Length: 216
Image 1 (cartoon, rainbow, N blue to C red):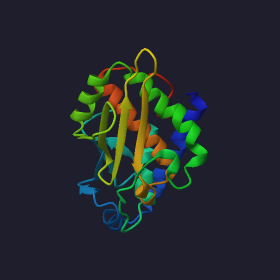
Image 2 (tube, one colour):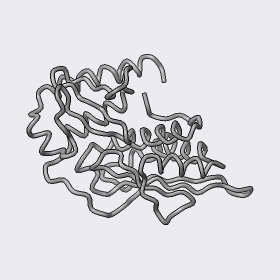
Image 3 (cartoon, rainbow, N blue to C red):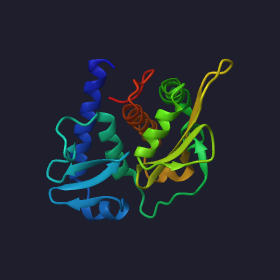
């Protein structure tokens, strides 16, 4: 990821922090029920990690930890706050990324940036993947060699499915979303949500991510 692109992401995050200051906190708490007001922060969890949006600045930090939060994580949080519709609800209809509303143009990039790295990273490492998913409280699914439903946010569950390879076929993976996810967040953010989950799983598994990802 080149410095100019990183800088561009930081500029976008700065703009979102200013936009946050124009949002009505009471309305945010109503539209995003998992959001909690705690002192100087509004807090929520993203793949099990607790983040706080500072009420006075709109800046996002990881609660209990120093250092900068990756820009893509911050953007996931900002876009959830901005796009979640009042009364949004999940449908129970699980679909691959490209079947989400307006997602098809981003389909090839999603495969390159998420599905292929997912498959390569955990090839031969089913147990490590299961342990990582279970450490996040994942719900075991009766599909694939390692299938789990994880909470990206409380309102956005994501399903990670993995089939290990053998001598004839390489490992394969898929990531499914509830069709109603785009009532909670912008469709482009589902790409970086998948990336955030993949980075979190590879870190917990102690495995280097095999391939490029969208996380900045």
